[in-house]
Image (cartoon, rainbow, N blue to C red; front, side, top):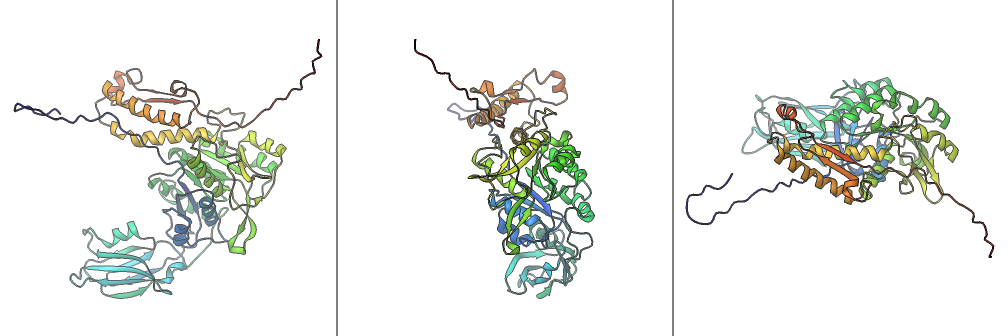
Length: 496
């Protein structure tokens, strides 16, 4: 709006720029699901380091692949992950009762029996209290909450505060008619129950939940995740559902091969020929074989592990050093903390699996154990999909997510040429930045990408319906999967 002119003089008016920065979305936030001996169950918990996982979920446990997958992820370059703890139904949860306050551990297991709840009312206001969660053996205060209230309308209502902030307990009852006194109460009644994992019917049921918002699908509640792995999981029917979930969430599913499978059995009966090669296979990649690595829980003896966690770490490392458009494979994609693979392959065996969209993990002299494939599960040569390669698909997902998040300002703006020009300017600037980083083919921007938003893409009928159409195209970089070197022997020439 222009300044109202009322007196003779000089007027200053600040005119807003039409430039709105489009931020690049994260590309390597991983998500893992599996059984753990402690911690919150059935909901995603963010871990920014191995220390976080160790503190919240109890570190490595030889009965589950989850901790090892998360450890391999952080050890190979990952820095951000969500973890969903899967537990058997009916496992017992520790509880504690103090006056009008009842709490229970965030997940089942005997782990919570090691803690105490300490409450203390304020001296000047006995309707408010402090709550500490203390480790019995050491007396260390693990979590502390000040000025809590039992009143549901209070901004520090205990139920809401602990639900949003505590990794240890949640409130099951808060009676506003009672006063909290100074007390120390043990959490009791927690039992470890049944250890479940891939191949167990109980694990399948808990993992899939209601198929909408519980189990692994609770990840829909988080802001963003890019990679999903259920370590060692090989249920094709459920993995197909997870593929669809990943496609809806603009993420990629990393699928582990079955333990002990051979190159022949993988090619004939494994994921490449199963339920995972449908239309949603563009959002999944299959890795074979399993890895050999030392196990700290067994005096560092060598044992086998599913590859998904380490592969996800390689994705994250490659994204950080080269960009999402670089294939997470090759001599730079070495696996740290790994001594080899369960089934070493030669070139001929690799050549059987590669056309079937199986990404092989190989061990080479000098380079060590490396990822030696970068195809999606639609990468079978017979399919001829445009989303054959992992980096091409992930680049598209990255662009989609970045534009989706940064173009919300367009909603409810006047739908005409001034808006279209702003869109072209901002999206074009974003795509040009990617071009300058080497994300696309071509030597000029015209060869590498285009952004179209005008009367050709948005007709009067679209305008009447409140629709603005933005067309973005890019020339993807495809990995040099086959390097052909031709040699010719020169015939000696006779001098004349």
